[in-house]
Amino acid sequence: DIVMTQTPLSSPVTLGQPASISCRSSQSLVNSDGKTYLSWLQQRPGQPPRLLIYQISNRFSGVPDRFSGSGAGTEFTLKISRVEVEDVGVYYCVQGVQFPQTFGQGTKVEI
Amino acid sequence: EVQLVESGGALVQPGGSLRLSCAASGFTFNTYWLHWVRQAPGKGLVWVSRINHDGSGTTYADSVKGRFTVSRDNAKNTLYLHMNGLRAEDTAVYYCARAMWGGAGPPDYWGQGTLVTVSS
Image 1 (cartoon, rainbow over the protein chains, first blue to last red):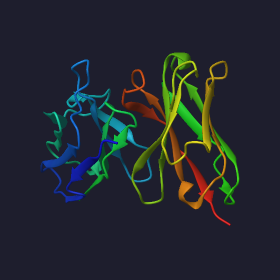
Image 2: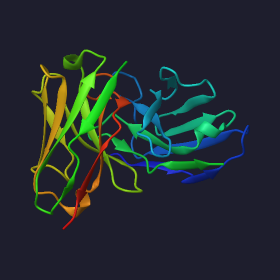
Image 3: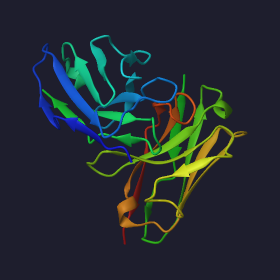
Image 4: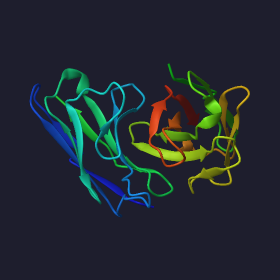
């Protein structure tokens, strides 16, 4: 299985300031179709996960533009340009290039 | 609006069985693959199983293979997870999620989850 490793596991942030989360995969996430199957999920306290970003940098419907994704191959980053109160929660990277889909351990973002 | 609503979670003894359901609405159910993902209390997300659009193809995590069976009824827009031989380590919130595309697409819509507790 592909191992997804996130850093940091906990990220204290200041409202209005940027935040960044890294995700590293044990194998390349580039598929045979040339696309990279790396996504980011947000899970607010007491809520189910929510898709934020897919294929490295595509924001899902309704996701604010303060969220952005970047990276290539095995190294990826989720950035929040200015953290808001509603961004508190746990963020997961997830790969879909190889069965089974695997998730990172999660990064807790707290004020 | 896409909606997924899980039900069927309960307290069950080790070795017992349970069937989870996931009722879907707001999209063309029979054209999407679906996943089951679980989350043990205070822990991260773990993929459990997936099923293709017409139910002819299923895959499982090694930890549940031979004990869990995923199925779907496209006439009822409902996904199921049949769980046998339950163990304490199966205790978790179980989410159903829609795959954005095919079997490798990210889970784009999630249900609220249903709690399964395995304990004597």
